[in-house]
Length: 92
Image (cartoon, rainbow, N blue to C red; front, side, top):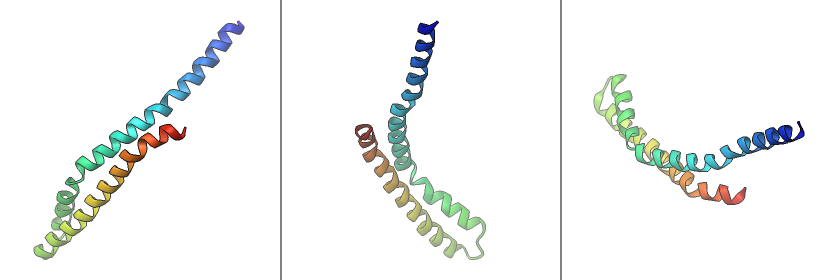
C-alpha cells in the first residue's frame, strides 16, 4: 500500500511538472504566429474603419495607420516572446 501511494504521489508530481516545459515551446510558437499573422492587422483595421466611415479617404488612411501600429506591436511582442522563451527554461 505504501508503494502504491508513493507511486501515485510521484505520478502526480511528474504530471504537474510536464506543462512547465511545454510552456516555453508554446510561447515560442505563439510569438512566431504573432509575427507571421501581423500583416492581417492592416486589412482588419481597414475593413473595420471603412464599414463605419462617412468619408472613405479618411477611413482608408486611418485604417492603414491604425493597422500599421497594431502590426508593429504584434511584431515586437512576438519577437520578444521568441527571444525570451529559451531564457525561461534557463531561469527555472
